[in-house]
Structure formats: structure tokens, C-alpha cells
Image (tube, rainbow, N blue to C red; front, top):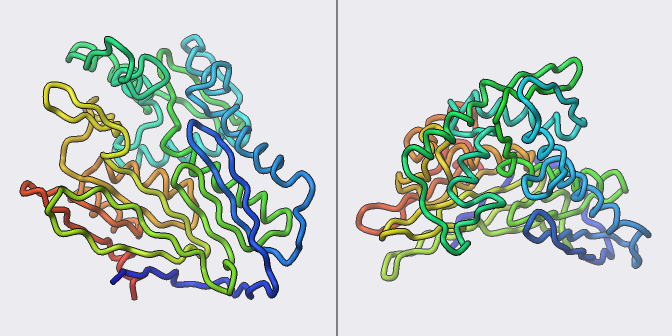
Length: 339
């Protein structure tokens, strides 16, 4: 038995008669991407795959923490007090990230790059590198001092940001979702209405799949402890909807018996340890699904559910209980999708 989630509004898109499914895939941002689209045309428009790769490459060139010379990398290396004009895509994501930081009280923090790097989840040093050591308190405090998003100044009229000195931007928790949105928009601009876009597990579905069905996907669930009762699978109709999931099981390492997940609480400078296993968010824009899932994962179940409910966010929280069970909490907006 599955829980089924269906959008409250349908865009009225008619199924494509005699459609064929086409698929492109590749690599980007240290992960994979794929696009599936339904069209009655037997062939594929020349240059379509290259156009989609261009959208992904643009996000990397502007917002990658891993590519030396990216716009973000140049900002992070800039002297204190200098102003930097941002390209429109970078500016859009930057403004959204700062908004989310304010709304979440810093649980989402675009200036937390120093902390991400310190704990081995950035470009270097990596937690997988030989000799990597868990940081001590003085190192954490030093990184925290460089992670205040409130020190960032933004001039919206001139679309420029000021480097206050030592702040290390990291937009990894929002840029991937934005990339999904850009690819979906590029497909729409080229006349393709029935599409499914996925980058690193984050998805956006538009229109209908073959046979007039919506794009059905299953929400990602954390692995259950052996012997524990499994959670109810949740199937979503991605029809004008996006989904993003943050979890404590994706990237983590063990040190002295403790598990350190890659989700950092930038308010305290340490990986989260409140027992929340995952948060899945449904939203009309993948940028916001991406950002909200990270913010709610950091906040934990109680505060996360409250904030999501306040803003009408459809979210599913999976908690690890002390006895090893996994339990679920759905926000009112998510319950509404279940009818």
C-alpha cells in the first residue's frame, strides 16, 4: 500500500497522442542529471542536449564551490570591503538564499562555507582524505566567526554584493534546485511541455508522461534499522511540482563511534544531532524545495514542522526514535495533497 500525493491544481495539459519518450543524461555538480520528455516528434531538435548542458554549465560557472575561478570562488577570495557585480542568475539565487537565512533564523546559511569546509564536506580537505581529523572547538569557533550571513551587504539596484572579509559563500543547498528550474524552463522555451528533470535526486515534473499519466515518483526514504517496521511508501504525481530531500544518511563519516552527517547546523557550527533522518519538500519551484529541505533538516522536527506550517510548506519529516524506529510527521500542506 502506498500513500499517494496529488497536486491541488492541474494545468489542463492534454496528453500527447502518439508520443514517444526521449531521454538525455550526463554529469554535473559532482552528480548526475537526466531529462525525460514526451513528444510526438520522432526525432530530437538539433542542439537540444547541448542547450540543456549549457544551462547546467552556467550554474557551475557562476555558483560552484568546487570550480576554481567560478564567480562564487572569486567572491570568496576577494579582499574585505570590495563590491562585486553578480550575473542575474547568481543574484537571483543569492537573494533567495539570504531571504531563507532570515526566515529560518540562520538554520539555512549561504555564508557557511568555512564550516562546510572545516568538517570535510567541501572541496578540500575532504573527510575521506588520509589524515583528516574532526575539528576541535577553537577551529569551529574560528569558522563560525566567518559565517555570519548578516555581514553580507546587497545593493539590489546595482545587483552587487560586498565581501565583508573572510566570508565563504556556499550555495550548494539551493543552486542544484535552481539548476533543475533552469533546465525545465529551457525545455519549455523550446516548446516541450511534458518533461521530467532530475539533478542529483531533485526533480521537477511538468505536463504528463506517456499514456496521459503524471510523472510518478517515490519519495526517498532513509534506510530503516534491521527489524524495524518499514515506513509507508509515498508516491507523488509531479505535475507542476518539484521535490527535494535532505537526509542524514547520504554523506557522513564515523569518528570515535559518533556519526557526523554532512548537514551542518551553521548556528552552532556542528553537524546536526537531533535525530531527524530526512525531510522531503514539495514546491512549485525546485530552488525553494531545495532550500526549504535544508533549512528544515537543520531545525529538526519540532521547530521545522512549526516553521513549515507557518509558511504553508508541504513537507514530510522522518525521525529516528531512541528505540530505532522511524516515525513520520506531515505538515498540513503535505496532508492536503494526500486528499
